[in-house]
Image (cartoon, rainbow, N blue to C red; front, side, top):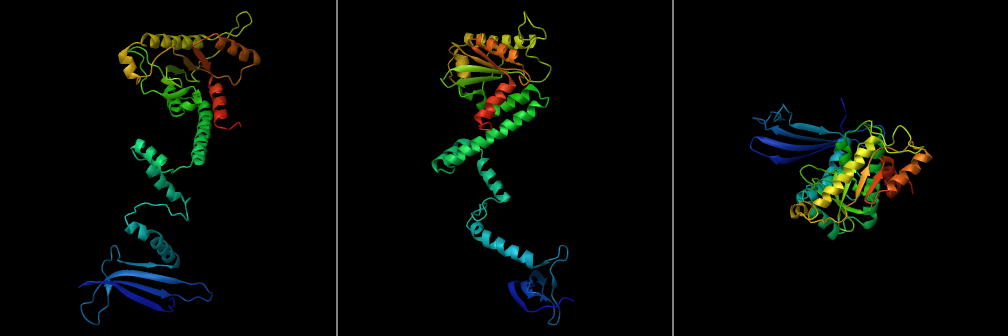
Amino acid sequence: MTRIEGRLGKILKKKPTVVTRAVFWKIPHNTEKEDIHLKLGRYKKPKDFHGEEEPESLHPKSELTLDQEEFRSLIDFLQENYEPFRQGVKAFIPLDRPFDSENAKQIRALFSLPNKRALIKFVLDNEVIPQELAAGLRQARRARAVLEFESMLNQNHREDVWQQWFQSNSWVLGSQFVRILDERHIDTQHISDFLMEAYDGFLDVVEIKRPEGGLTFWSSTLDHGNYVPSTDLTKAITQASRYIYEIEREANSIKFLQRVGGVKTVKPRCILVFGRSNNWNAQQAEAYRIINTSFHNLTVLTYDHVLARARCISGIDA
């Protein structure tokens, strides 16, 4: 039987038929190791003077013994949490352990509040996030998005998956765009991937085609020794040009202006994201340059061009 050296008890609460006790005891060891246990229990009072106390409940048992490690953890928990909790703080971040994984839950809870406008105002007004940290977070988020983009290029995703990625990372399309508009419908028959507000305040359009699915950029045969667009690319260019035309037709429509949030239309331009260029030769790169310069309101980018731009903006290739 374990030898006990020293015992200290206290009645925490006494009722007519039940008593709650806390008892310390020390278990001696041949080493200098300290081993103090704590027993907490709620017991039935004996009916006669010579009777013994029994746990109030056996299932579950209303008695618990904490060993040295558990007892010390309980002390730490009470010291760190009791006073803030008593004052009404249900969740807080201890500054002596700011990077514990548990603290991430509290930070996520704050930034998950539904009223984003009020949250942004609170963060800005109180300088919660220093400019250096905000810039670092933005670069880290962009670098993570680039890695996700590279991974997606090796998978066979549907076009709507790519739309979602571009929706979340519109910065890769260039600094000429301020924001993606909520509206995608040009009219009842033409639905773009993205209607954009450019930095000059006017409306532009972005159209993307998935990089997989057998779509080819170049025709399988040369024309007089020159690389020419494939039928797939020609169809995509025709569709993008049609969108530009239909947007211009809607330029004076009050209903269209309302649907796009008041963003005016003057000589709209389009970015078409189509195909891959990671295995092009020098002649194909030159042909691409020639084709692109022949358009005055349309720019064709491959997914690899977008990737190169994203790596540069995010600082990965800096």
